[in-house]
Amino acid sequence: MSSSNTSSTRWVHELLVVETSGKGFTNITAQVASVVARAQLRVGQCLVFVRHTSASLVIQENADPAVLRDLERWMSELAPEQRVWEHDDEGPDDMPAHARSALTRSSETIPILEGRLALGTWQGIYLWEHRSSRHRRELVVQICGAE
Amino acid sequence: MSSSNTSSTRWVHELLVVETSGKGFTNITAQVASVVARAQLRVGQCLVFVRHTSASLVIQENADPAVLRDLERWMSELAPEQRVWEHDDEGPDDMPAHARSALTRSSETIPILEGRLALGTWQGIYLWEHRSSRHRRELVVQICGAE
Amino acid sequence: MSSSNTSSTRWVHELLVVETSGKGFTNITAQVASVVARAQLRVGQCLVFVRHTSASLVIQENADPAVLRDLERWMSELAPEQRVWEHDDEGPDDMPAHARSALTRSSETIPILEGRLALGTWQGIYLWEHRSSRHRRELVVQICGAE
Image (cartoon, rainbow over all chains, first blue to last red):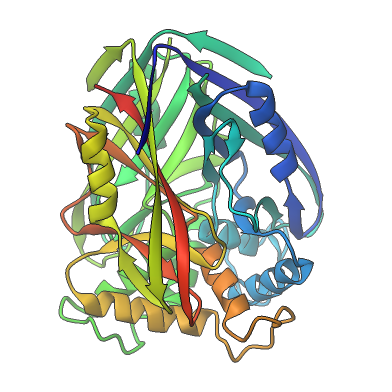
């Protein structure tokens, strides 16, 4: 067990804006890691929070892009546009987008150890756009920790 | 990037009890926001944790109630009562309730900025009851942050 | 509302290695609780983070093992090996494992109150292995809090 006492906790946050181009994944790992690097904290936690209910977050494999294509196709089957949805004013992709968000995450928290995100080798942080058209998505990256 | 050093971290928690009336959603955003307001912290994080495995949390659209009705119906299809479940002593809705909980969240973490929950305009925090009958659900709202 | 000021925040972390024996659940509650006990903090939060994208975390019922068998069978139907997946180099269980991870959690955060995990009576923390063969899984247990 590694333990550290500290008399000073630092809170850092940054608003991240991601322009998406319809359904699919945007790898935001480098952007999040850059906020962590600038925060210059030795230990802490990094919270990524998406301020929408039709786009969400997942931590997924960062190696083979076919993984992301499979996830997108399979999720389209779990929450199909062809199903009859009561809430359909904004188009057939709107309610499936809420359903897909309910199954995935509004936030992810990643430990910071030795000044870096303690992700596994194959893990990337992804914003998952669930609407068909382009969207401007706002995320909060918030870090707390100690020097 | 906004950064703040502080020599004092404050921890605040409150037990929230929600009486549900069978399957469906209870909007707990105002109750959580009220704990945050009373905590009087400028920056921090708010953790909402549900102490059950047959009710769960989601952050979802707070505008059109049809979204919640669609989510409830669609989730009933993903984890149907009609399926044969081995664990069925407590009724046909029990095991689907565990399955629905596994797909959604035991906790949600929301950043606090400028003394308020940094939710998007259309985001609400919901307790999702997955059992058919009334239940008394316990949630922990825990805040840590700095003045 | 219970509130406590503190001038000292402590950060503690420990790497947990779990040897799995193919698809199914490992109850890690006792191991996580043991890290919390050794940390000797009165209030705080415990983050459990899994450093993989084909194994994940859920908080589920700790009483009847049939619940876990039902979850495993039902999840195998939601993300079936028989479906045609583009990413199939590592075997038919690989892509379903990523899909199952996307639906469950990379991390769980549990509040610490009075020095203990504030889990409900029936809640256990589980590592869910989604691959068919044995795997060595790394988790980070990270605690921050006050004495």
